[in-house]
Every structure is written in structure tokens, then in C-alpha cells.
Image (cartoon, rainbow, N blue to C red; front, side, top):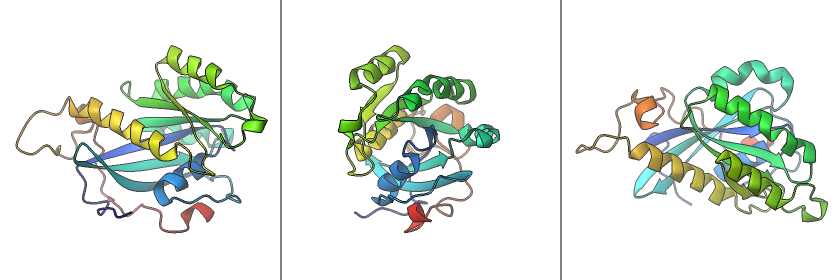
Length: 217
């Protein structure tokens, strides 16, 4: 799959991946950004991110996807982590009931610290482990509907719905933001307009992207 340079984009959206440690956040990121899965991936220490560009309605959308550790000792990072984010994947493990029970707390944090217009998708990861399921799809779907979230189940291991989850999230962010962009001869917003058009200005376009092999580092 060929991609344009990460500096050659129409919109740059910051997306965060949130959830308990061990739910597969890092492998969801590496599957989307690099189409790789690392079975021996270690817990993320601090914050990491990768970028990837996709096409939405003829526009190039570059997603800057941030992944952070779920452990409580890294909670001091939250302000920086959420700043400028316009989308979130709220992830739990379908085989671990506790990670689903903690989703409500994570959602409260997101809504308390992030932009009120943030698009949030609830993601039940590890759908390949159906025989170990502890969280019913219907239960998670009902929670998502009550809270106004998008919902899907994924498997970073076999790539089920991973691409679709990120694309749906980014498409929804684009459509929300695009409606607020003033019409002009140039649809690309001016860097710095951030909050009004849901575009992230960065002085390190592409420089922070993780290179091949990042998910196993």
C-alpha cells in the first residue's frame, strides 16, 4: 500500500487510544500503522505514537495516533496526552470483564479532559478469543448506545475490523470538522485554526512517526 508523505496532507488529526493495560492498545496501533502484530510486545512505557495517511472523500487525512500506558503510575501524563485530540478509541479486552467495567471511568476522564466534540469509539479487542469471552457483545453495544459512542469489536491478532475502526473514527471526525470549515478556494485549513476546524498543527510533521519494527521495540 502506497502512502503520500506524512507532511503532504489536507488534515492532520490527533487520535488517542485509551484503556487498561494489557487490552492490546499498542498492537491495535501497530496493526493500523504498520500492519504488524507483535505477540511479545511489552507494556508501553510513557507515551508513543505513529502516523498513517488515508483518503476520505478525496482528501488526505493523516492520523497521528497516540498510545499510552494504562498503568495508574502514568496518570500524570493525561493533560498532555489529551491535548488537541479529536478522536479516541476506548479499548477493553472481551476476555477480561474488569477492563470493560473500567470503561466508564476512562470515558469520564476523556470527557473531562478532552474536547467536547471528540469522536469516541468503544472497541472490544481480542475478538479472536471468542471461546474465552467474558463481555457480551450486546452488553457493550448497549453501553455504547447509552453513551452516544460508536462501537465495534476487533482483533489486532488477525486484523479483524482494525482498519475499519480507525477509518470510521477518522471519517466521522472529518465530517464533523469539515462542516465547520469556511468555504474558500482552498479547503485546507490554515495551521493553528485547530479548535474550529478540528485540525492539529504540528511542527514535527512526520518526524515523530515510528519506523518499521516499532511495535516490537
